[in-house]
Length: 381
Image (tube, rainbow, N blue to C red; front, side, top):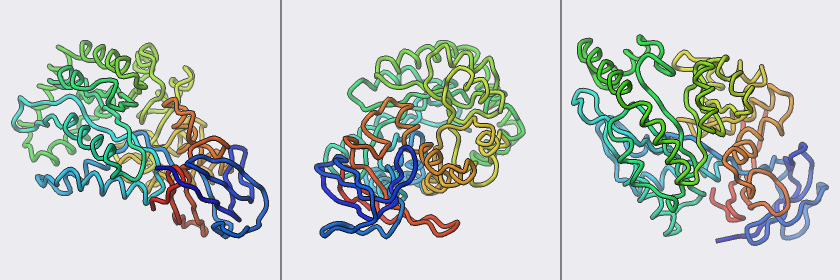
């Protein structure tokens, strides 16, 4: 469905900066932008609030939290997806790439994880087709190189599945995110309840698995992204050689590089860097990697992701605007920059002809409050 609305007396966040004016959305598209603080009859008075493009989220694990709200509790998927969708609309996200892991480890009873992506993707796509979801959903396949079933799981997807992003993930112990084995020990032993011997056996299994099939899986992921017509992303780049490999594969953006060296190397190759908004807001990485703020201050941060806290996306973008002294640039990290990274040309900016995906935001000093979310001109939150 496409809707119509006129938002007047708003501080419109245009690509070049904020102006006071009126935004016209007709039949789901932005049709006119007027300047001035007037409130014509039949319009919505925004009382000077910010009106900006709807937020675009490229990588979020939030759906997993709804499906498994507590350890060993599996929630019915349809209501979980609907709740996830409503939560995103309620924090200003109008386009989301739901991150689903493909590639499982099933042979280790102590610390295994099974396949789920195909079934969950079918349920998301079914709810979308039925018109139940409020915002625009695409799929992001997080392809785990260090796994046993990756190729078989990838084969279950195709060009019709709205797969917009495929990311090269490699959680082999001793590298990238898990370079620090002590950090990995705390994470794995805490999550799975392993003792020391079981942990050592676990990482040995994964390292052996990666040595045997890692390169084959990496090539399969690159081929799958081409087959789907999806954008390829790297994940957790740590060293310059890793970035060089990612660049050779043709990645469009780098998710969560773990070091300044990796962020530098990506920028040197024209690859945009995405960091987590929770990292920015908390003042550092929860796993000891490079701080998002440090990269932002160095001009090495281009895109924000809410990662595991949906509400962090808008807050983080505002923080970047303050840090850079440029609100439009900060908001671009969650609107136009992610849109460009995945090749969208119909959203991410307040420009005539774009989709009417917009949000209304009130800011009172450090507090940011969402006052409305519209998708194609329809009020969804």
